[in-house]
Length: 158
Image (cartoon, rainbow, N blue to C red; front, side, top):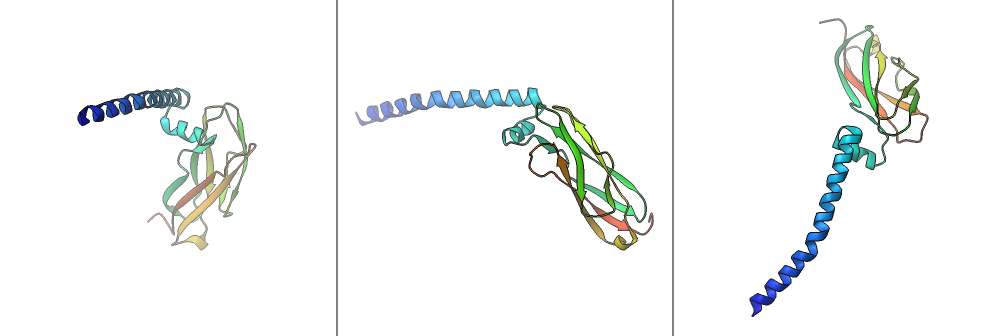
C-alpha cells in the first residue's frame, strides 16, 4: 500500500515538472536558433542579451618582438551587434607611440570593421616588454571598449 502512494506522489511530481522543463527547453532552443541566425554564433547572442552592442573580437593582441623605430600596424576587429550604425570617432592611448590610424569609422548594423593602430617603439622601451592600451570613443552610451597591445622591444632584427 505504501509503495502505491509513493508511486502516486512520484507520478504527480513528474507530470508537474514535465511541462515547465519542456517549455524551458523550447525557449532555450528558440533563443539559440535566433542567435545563430541573427549574429552567426551563440556567444554573440549571449553578449547581446547581456546588453553589449559592440564587441572586440580579440581585445588583446600580442605583437611578439618589435624593433626600435620600426612602425608596426595591428588591427582590432569590432563587431556591431545592434540594429543601428555606431560611430567610433576616436581613441585615448596611454603612450605617444600608439596611434589610431583608421578613425573615425562607422560600423554598420551587424557588421565587423577592422580598426588599425600603429605603434613605433622608442629607444626608451628597448629590452623591455610593453603593454599599451587604447579606449575607443563611441557616439552611443556603451561600456568601455579597451584594446591592448603587448610584446617586447628589441634593438634590431635579431
